[in-house]
Image (cartoon, rainbow, N blue to C red; front, side, top):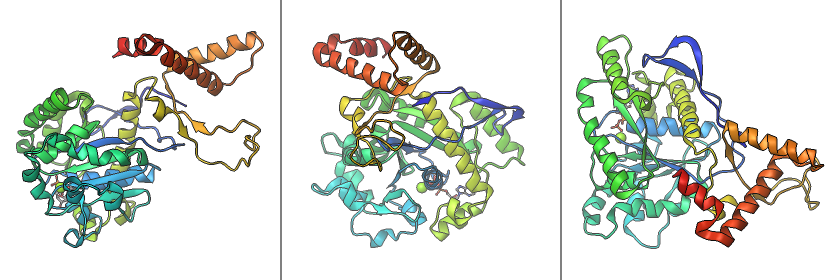
Length: 389
Ligand SMILES: Nc1ncnc2c1ncn2[C@@H]1O[C@H](COP(=O)(O)OP(=O)(O)O)[C@@H](O)[C@H]1O
Ligand SMILES: [Mg+2]
C-alpha cells in the first residue's frame, strides 16, 4: 500500500531548467508486476535522442526492478542495433507481428543483456507496414492489439517511434498511456513541437482518450552555451510542469555506447550520462505515482491476481503467523484516505474488533464488489466513479 506523497525540494537549489529541484524519492520495490504502462517516445524530428532515451531509460527502470519491454517501432532498427542485435538477420520482427495472423508477441521478443528488459525488434521490413496497413479497418490499432497479450507481463512498455507522424507513430500513440518527447535544445528543433502536440491532441480526442503527454525531456544539453540555456528556458515557459527537471547533457559516451550495442548504464555505469537517466527514471516513476488516481480501481479480474508463491507451506499462514493470501490487491491511497482508514481501524477497535488496515481494505472492497454485482449501474462504486470522471 503506497500513500502518494508531495514532492520535496532541495532548499535553495535551482535545477538546469531554472526551477527549484525536487528530490525524487527512491522508487519502492514492486511486490507484483504488470499491467504495464505503455509509453511512446516520440518526436517526428530525427536525431533528438528518442532511441537513446528508450534504451537508457528502459535500462534504468529495469535496474529499479521494473519489468521493461522496449518496442523498436522504427524501420531503421537503431534500437535493436543499440542493444547488440543485427536487424537484417532476424527471422521475425515487429513487422511480422503486425502483418501476420497467428504469431504472438512472445514469439518475437528477445531478452536483452539487461536483466528484466526485453526487446521487440524491427528492421527495414517495417517500412512496408505503413503502406500495407493503410487500407485496413482499424489500421490505427494494430500495434495495440498485438501488444495487449503481453501487457500483464511488464510494468513499463516503451515504444521507440520513427521520426515521422505517419501511421506507425499514430499506432504507437493510439495504444499508449503516455508520451515522452525528447527535445534537442536547439531553436530549429522547437518548430515541429507544435505539430507534434496537435497530433497528440488529435489522437487523444479521436482515437484514445487515455493518452496524455507525460513530459518533455531536454537532451544534448550543454550548459556552457547561452543558446541551449535560452532554448530550455523557452520550453519551460511554454510547457511549464510538463518539462522534466532532469536534463540529459551532451556527451560522446552515448554514441560510444550505441556502437558497443549496450545501454549507457552498462557500458559506462558510473558516467554522468548513466546517472542522468537513472535520475530520469526516478522522476518518471514519481510523476506516474502522483498522477495515479488516489484509489485505483481497475476491473475485478485485474484486482484479483494470484499472489506470488511464498514459503508458507500448506498451513495458510506465513512464518510471521499472518494469514497467507492467495490473491493480491494493490491499492494506492491518498493521505486523507489513509487517515480515514486509520480512523476506521480505531473506531472498530472501540467496538472490540481488532483488524489491520489490509483486512479493512479487503472487506471494504468485497462489500463494494458485492454491491456492484447486485446493483450494477446504480452501485455505489459506479456512481462514485461516474461523479469522479
Ligand atoms: N545526450 C547525448 N549526447 C550526445 N550524443 C547523443 C546524446 N543522445 C543521443 N546522442 C547521439 O545522437 C545520435 C541521435 O540519437 P538517437 O537517440 O538515435 O536519436 P533519434 O532516435 O531521435 O533519432 C546518436 O548517435 C546518439 O548516440
Ligand atoms: Mg531513433
